[in-house]
Image (cartoon, rainbow, N blue to C red; front, side, top):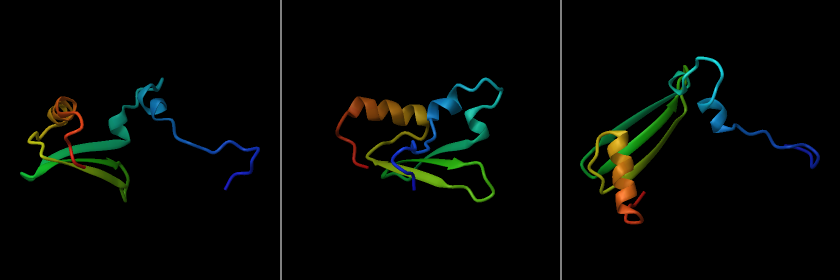
Length: 82
């Protein structure tokens, strides 16, 4: 908990993307896309011994790669169910 005078700590995602060193985002995160026929699932996980995994399923999408999923989401606007 922070006091009113302290700024809460946060991670700026842009710092991971624009780093002066040679580290790539893939050194920290892994992204995978799968499709079970009912929708496309995107999983983002940390590269740790015990990774933290975040996932979202976009029902109705047919793509099996990240570029295709993003294109379908953009093309279909608000017609996607999460």
